[in-house]
Amino acid sequence: MAGPGEFELIREYFASRFQANAPGAGVELGIGDDCALLTPPAGKFLATSVDTLVAGVHFPAQADPYRIASRALRVNLSDLAAMNATPLWFTLALTLPESNAEWLEGFARGIADTAHLFDIALVGGDTTKGPLSITIQVTGASEQPLRRDGAGAGDSVFVSNTLGAASAALPILLGEYRAGEAQKQQAEEAFYFPQPQFELVQKLAGYASAGLDISDGLLADLGHICNASHLGAQLELEKVPVAELARSVNPATALETAVTGGDDYQLCFTVPERHLDAVAQLDLPVTAIGRMSAGSGIQCRFNGAPWQAGHAGYRHF
Amino acid sequence: MAGPGEFELIREYFASRFQANAPGAGVELGIGDDCALLTPPAGKFLATSVDTLVAGVHFPAQADPYRIASRALRVNLSDLAAMNATPLWFTLALTLPESNAEWLEGFARGIADTAHLFDIALVGGDTTKGPLSITIQVTGASEQPLRRDGAGAGDSVFVSNTLGAASAALPILLGEYRAGEAQKQQAEEAFYFPQPQFELVQKLAGYASAGLDISDGLLADLGHICNASHLGAQLELEKVPVAELARSVNPATALETAVTGGDDYQLCFTVPERHLDAVAQLDLPVTAIGRMSAGSGIQCRFNGAPWQAGHAGYRHF
Image 1: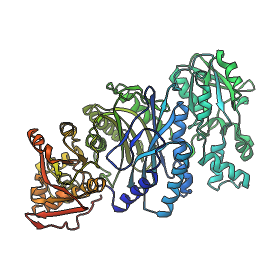
Image 2 (image 1 turned 30 degrees about the vertical axis):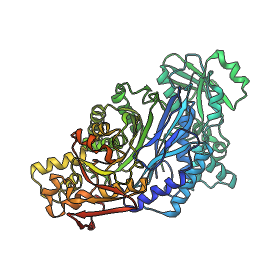
Image 3 (image 1 turned 180 degrees about the vertical axis):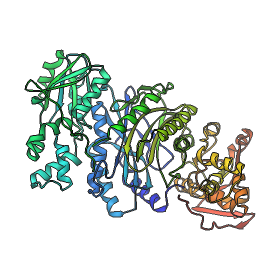
Image 4 (image 1 turned 60 degrees about the horizontal axis):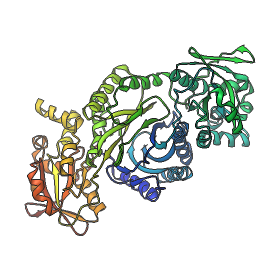
């Protein structure tokens, strides 16, 4: 059954574009055979992760293809960063309703630019006809992986940079909120160009006891650290670094957006007390917002008073 | 944005089902963190391949989920086999229109049974809401990969077993052809349970100069060997082993079905003259059907007379 001729052509289009893109990542044979052949680095773990982005669910179907590509690859790279792995190679499975040269050109440029920026090689893929969706699998190498299950009771909980921008960006990108130019720019950046936190995680290696990237929202993702580490957590929400965009779009809901909104791809990690000074010395853009505790579940307080999230939940296009 | 709660549950459903399924394939950490952590075998290539199957394109949307799962994983495993790689691990990105417990139960059983049969570990995945499609990426290890680009002029062209059954199966599975019970059984086997040719390829290692699995049809796929090896080929089509099912469904078109129909996942490979005796000694279910030649393109003859394929092309649901 396989793809029709035009989809074969798309495959070759990608293959020719990326043939030269093998930055010493151990690529013996890239696109074009039954399998890619790879030589993994010796003495390290391979870290691998796969994510699917579906049009209308994970991005607006009519979004700019360059931006869709950027987001799709960055979201996957974020999983490598969160594991403290260095990018090696990735595959791209692209399902398209039709062969549209202009769309493909933009999409391929987005993939190529992002791959170049993060020094990762495209080694294989598949192109099929169907409703638009993108599945990317990234593989990296890690000497000292940062897992979810290493947190200890009493460890401090940190987040990187600020939270809430990507979630606050949605009504702007959907045209539901009349934003100014600066807000529009921030929204595009936050949603389509999330920053995998490679540098930050590398500096934290040896100090952080557990960590992950915040894709589903702080509370949901910290919940994953809690579950994996068999602990609970106590947060002081007044300390949460709320993104300027979330504040400017709606000050009343900005904090809730920051703690329940997903898609920021910032890091949430835990640090044992004995390493707190060392982490402070690193002068990183990170903020302590609470502690891990015995038991289970996450207790939130705001200036000492109990705090409950309203019904923010997930937002779908 | 991420998946809604029910899709988180599906992920956990798979994770719990496959937690124990790590047959010494170097799985340090499986499903449930940002990445899987893997220890690849030393001194071998990693071989990796990804394929997407879309409902209504690659399988009937209403097909039995156990069979869909079987086909999806086997089709990917076939790429490992064709590269002479041994299965290690795979990931599963599943996009579903709704969370249907019965469907998922059947699908998960199909994945689990197939993974168990071929000794491959599920190490990661993603579950998203959207039109039904399945993307699987398989990774294996290979000491002596069988590539497409190694054929020499004068090498004999072989195929394994018989061709045309999967393509002949389609009208039966779609209810367009009134088949008997034996035909129905053959059709189900051919289409949903293709056999990755691991054993055959292992025995051919050192003798075969090039090879691949026939997914798009013999002529299309042999064309890939021709292109990669910068050669042409001359086939004697009266020698092609045509599947019994193709003959019984339509004797008049059986040969054309065998040489242009896809989805059989049999092996097409080339053997230099000096190894022909050794290959004959192996007593494998393989048939020589022609030779590689200088130049380009595939020339087909049937009992000496030029032969041209009609308009068989690809068949989509």
